[in-house]
Length: 248
Ligand SMILES: C[S@@+](CC[C@H](N)C(=O)[O-])C[C@H]1O[C@@H](n2cnc3c(N)ncnc32)[C@H](O)[C@@H]1O
Image 1 (cartoon, helix red, strand yellow):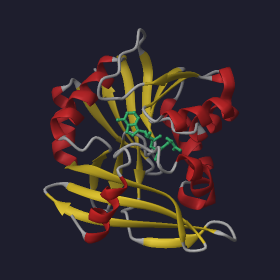
Image 2: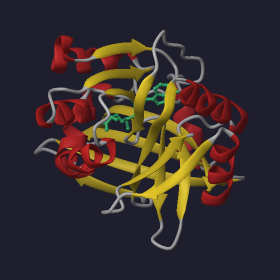
Image 3: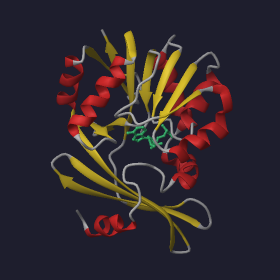
């Protein structure tokens, strides 16, 4: 673990949740971190005529909001394990979607879905141009695989799981408003793990921070795992923004 990450763990906050930075999440995301218009346009293409949809790691509901603005016929369920993120989704969307405050590693629902997706939520792909890497918010390999199994069990035959692609992570710092600055620092721990430290500062004072450890799995290994789960890799969408698996 690098020096910064080591120091950060002294804060004794919850690791691997977004509780430390949830108050600042929207201002970061809507200042260029993600392009929600592009994400929702591509996701609607991937979902096609599927209506009953589960979002894994719905966060504050920004993707769900974009989807519903373009297709009010969708029946969305948003799952998240960070209460303060889900509270903002509820404020944003009211009764337009269903909410599940559950951890994807243990979740259980009384219904199945035609589609499930994650946009930087529980899982995503890092796009290196010539190859993809599967990236997991669940940093233990066995628990990650059990969670994916659980997701597939909640899909109907023919249902799809679509995961958004992201650019490789880098260290950087950028102003979000006149007084608020965001910084992130990435540290490769080896053995398929990396850490990311998110920090928000105002006049050089840290006002929020979160430390997250991610697991990385190679493209071939994850495709093989999905095949074991009875899911066929359908591949990338036309604009290379989502990778989709289909339950057979
Ligand atoms: C980067 S945010 C993405 C939120 C949303 N999809 C968006 O695009 O704005 C990741 C979300 O995934 C949730 N998450 C991470 N690990 C999770 C887990 N094990 N179970 C449920 N939710 C999880 C976090 O709480 C957070 O709200």
